[in-house]
Length: 121
Image (tube, rainbow, N blue to C red; front, side, top):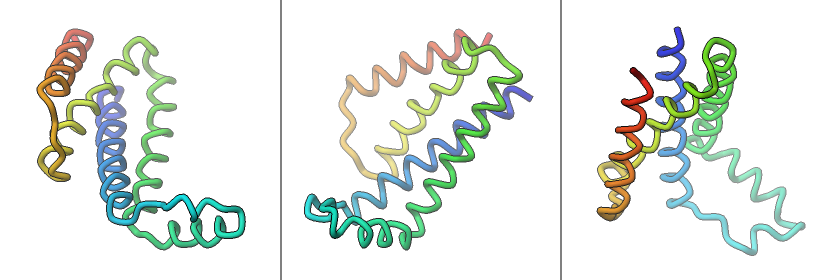
């Protein structure tokens, strides 16, 4: 059960972050949108962006799955195991979002993956 929760957390977090990044790169919020008179319009515009709404929904799933995971597993397991999101997000940032990923970020992702593997045993 705990590994199912980890899979749900990792999957929904990665997909939510990917959708959020994709949508915000397409339609970045401008500083003038944050003025008090324009805030309501900006929030309404954000609510009409399907990928962004889906990203928020996925992050909510991740949050509630993490709460469930904490009820059945130790915190010292839950936090490191869900750090696998770092590895998947790095790979997907490169492949899907076409971001430039430096060798230091790849090394960091590899170290996180090694740490997750050590703690999973």
